Length: 328
Image (cartoon, rainbow, N blue to C red; front, side, top):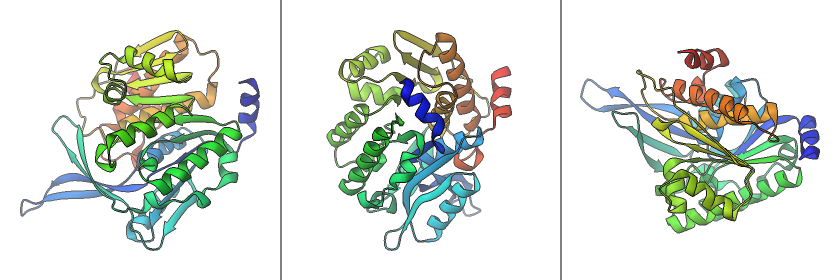
């Protein structure tokens, strides 16, 4: 780990992420005729994570694919505008940008419908992976939307391999979206692959219960630890807050529930970005309970702040806004 810390200081990028970049059509009222109105928000978990990191002053880069169409151009502009390096973002001349329709329930929770058969994000190929970019990053982050189909799965696994050889820390958020998988057995197999390659795991309450078959989150974490050596495991628990599992330590921090919550889109990604921010600044070695509490408190506050805004990527909170939530 010491060698890794030295290497980390010499890398150009703090965090590079690979995965989906898409348009989230989020509900935004009704028209005069009574039809639902939708706003075309830039979305996709990996770039949400990077947008949060960029807002906190980190140098980030994205690897993925959009269509050579109106929405693809909008997405490229959006990530460039927030400061994410887009040299690893490719445009597909034939396949359109992936779209998602997001239905929001009264309590802010969501349902997704995807237009992705195929979508440009799943067309990324192994030979398109930018090796030098990945070799230049301290932390490499990925999820499973880039593992749903054979071609992009091979590309993702190649990127992970390059990152490991370059001594990057590997961060993984399964971000399970059942409609995008041919079968949930296939999803489980790829999530287990992710677990076998990551140093930092961010997993949601319902994901860990589904994956491990354990109702209790600590039992679920123990199930994972019996099979995989993951130094830091974070469980996001929605309205219950979050937990960090590190060595023999378990730290839980309550959420900052907001009266003016609109939707939860991007809350988990915002949380994940803040965790990676802490690791960028402090490393993954010798973390104390106080360190973990500080990390989770900041991450919970940022996640709470994003629930009061529509979309995520373009409207990430800055440090002052996050600290204001923590003071309330």
